[in-house]
Image (cartoon, rainbow, N blue to C red; front, side):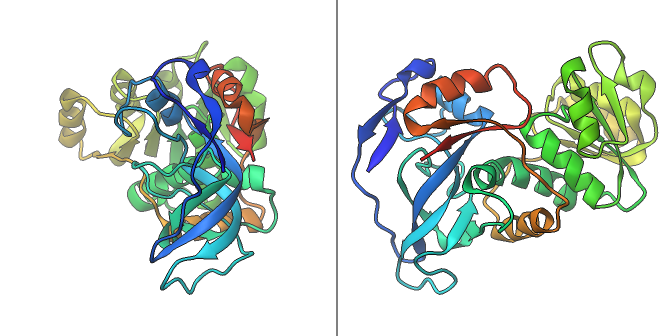
Length: 308
């Protein structure tokens, strides 16, 4: 099979296509012919050596896949050859998504939403599960409550805005000036230009904050939360921030996304119900993975994908 590999850490130019052995599904796994692979910021961090999840190269990047089941391993009854599936297998271990074939545990994939193509389905798993697990499993906003979603035009953010709306929340989001209209278009009730306005002076009595920026930003977000609210952060939260939160009865949840078939099924239901739509800023062919990584670094709206 053809796959994108790297023999050293570095910039986008370290990525290249080479022939690699075809994977085989072990017991409990399926072999997926990959039609599209999503790209996430963590991919760039691993590529550059800043987040060494996969150890030393060579390795194959990527966790988001959408494609067709080619074969099933022993004991797999939920899928058969020809089924269209999507998922985020093995994270944070190597999944090898940037390839023509990928072996994936059957409990880490789900049936692809029927209403979107493979490129859009591949844009959904890691970012969508991050938003789903952060909001539904940890934040738990109720209908009519207020949710603040930072970076509402980003990969996680634009899905979180839509999920929060589907849960019935009143959604406030932050974005840069060129992305305000987009965030409004996906359902945000209020959008704050963070380059012009201090969000802490514009937002109050929030029930749930989903913060994808971390650090001091998490501390500032506390000012927007009501006593007893929830701060869900995708990055580390300072001890001092946790202490402030505890004094006000604010629950702080630091989360890392995990493979989650049940979550994928729920995301697919939202897509098929027209309540969730992953936005693909641009799709690149497999042999332009380096260019795709460089484009992602410009912080486009939504997601970037590779088509295989």
